[in-house]
Image 1 (cartoon, helix red, strand yellow):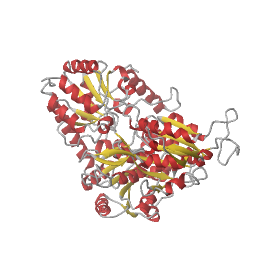
Image 2: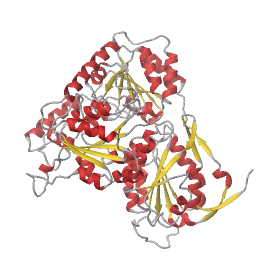
Image 3: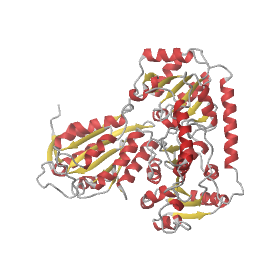
Image 4: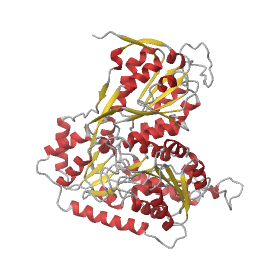
Length: 623
């Protein structure tokens, strides 16, 4: 047995270990950790940066502008890599660490891996309280880093240098586990980072990690086969887990062979192309009329790799009360939701097992033609909303239609919060698989541009789709977090950012007024500002140019199309701003359960409450 040791500081040993972890993508061995986004402060600059500087050719460090956004960039990277390669986000203690908590929640909600490293206070407590330390009078062990505990899958604090020997493998195993996948956090005490220890050399031997594919229990597969065979109007819901299992082709072949239409969740959109023969559109609150019509009539729903979020289920009003669910999911927690027949296992393997058990069974022959007819009607509706009009200001649908026209098949569309998710989920017609990223698990404003930077990095490596990230966001989100335009300009990564300027938080204003509350504090004209009649206008193009981006402001769809063509030929980031309509939306036909006041002075609120009660009366009872 090799008992040789090497003396290193804890920070040096941590970095050396991370550099020796590998994975395989498209048969090629690549580093598991592709790089690190970092902002240094007194909690990590003297020790962790010393270790990172020496390995910058193996583990490149990218300087972030904001701790939250650099972790969001890491999340965008992980999603583009289908969870097979990971980025690290490192920060100092105090406010830097606290800034990353929102990003940790985004990764947690979306089941995405990112390694978060933060400095911590002194393990020996001798200098306490140190700069940026928050003191909890009843528990001196608590620091800002404890706030990560609810929003990560794995949490640890290193107070002794040898603790990384057991902690790091557990953190990686958690991030790569299909059932447990999510962010991992490790706090690094300042004095522990500096301490030297005689680490066993075997700890640093190269290791190739592979994503496990757990097989489902035979009895649960047999039960699923029996239930599916009883179906007269089956339906498949394709979730994000299909993409992370790399099961797109298997699901499509299964659906075609068995004659079952496939509808998509927001996270699952892009597993199939828009024009795939079995595709019937997105489902739910921001879904299509075709998918929602099929859901209403479905008697057996095969949910693959989805956590059945309320936007998918219409707050559990999208299905009949008699419909039965089969849930294929690597995570037991997700598989057992809402009284489903749970089949806990990898999507790709379980689809194969299910197919083998079905023999020559197929859905009734009239089901797929009906789905195609409904989907054709949906496409006509999209065409009508995307067609140019004489309106002075274009709608989101019209803007997206032009973007879709100019986008190359392997360009990736990125969106997140505000009015964008609903409109891109409905209107974007995916040309190549896995070229759509709408972060709506956490609906994190500020994800978009940061993720564009991360996706641009992911497009450079093996197995990547290539192409250009196209980021779509509103003016409100742009104002919240835009500094990674500068990051992309610094590193030379190409992306196109489309800013739809509609004068405020338009979609939440829509919900506010739809539920009877007068417009208040969402659109700029309804805010407590100096000049409501003429709110201060932001020149987004000028702002972007100041950060090193190519930029244009355009007024109409023809100019917008020309600007997109121009942007495709640019290097680095390009920002295009366009004034857009805050009041015109592609219609939806699924319900959403939100809180509406039980009593109110507003008549419209009281009417909205009655409608909300009717929605709740139609909900399926479940857990």
